Length: 132
Image 1: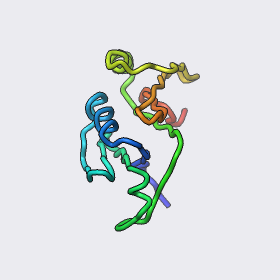
Image 2: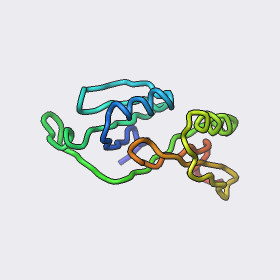
Image 3: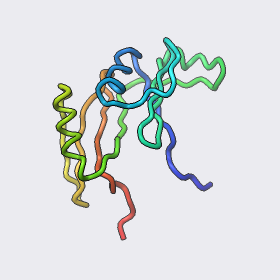
Image 4: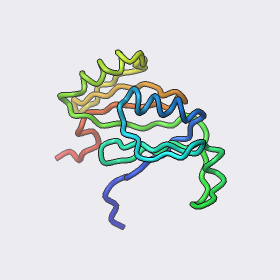
C-alpha cells in the first residue's frame, strides 16, 4: 500500500446545529455537505471533517454503518507565524484553552474542546515531520 494522507476523519456529535455553529460559525471551516438530522461535513485545508449523528450513521442505509461514542481527539495544523494569532482568535471566541504544550522540536500546540467535549488541538506546521 502507498497511503498519501488521511483524507477525512469523523466525529460523532449530539447536536448537529451546535456542531455547525462551532466549526463553521466560530472556527470558520467551510461547510461542504449536509443532510439534516444525519451529518454535516467541513473542509479543513486539504482534509475533510465529517460530523455524524451517531444514531443516524449506524443505520447504514447506503454506506456501511458506523458509530462511535466518547471523547475523541484531532489536531488542526497552522503555520508557525500564525500560531499566536489562532490562539488569540480562539480565546476571543470565548473558547477556553485547556493546555498549551512546547514540544522538543521547538514547536507548540494548544488544546481546547468542542461542544461535544472532543479534544481539539492547534499544532504548528512541522509536527510529525521526519527529523533529518
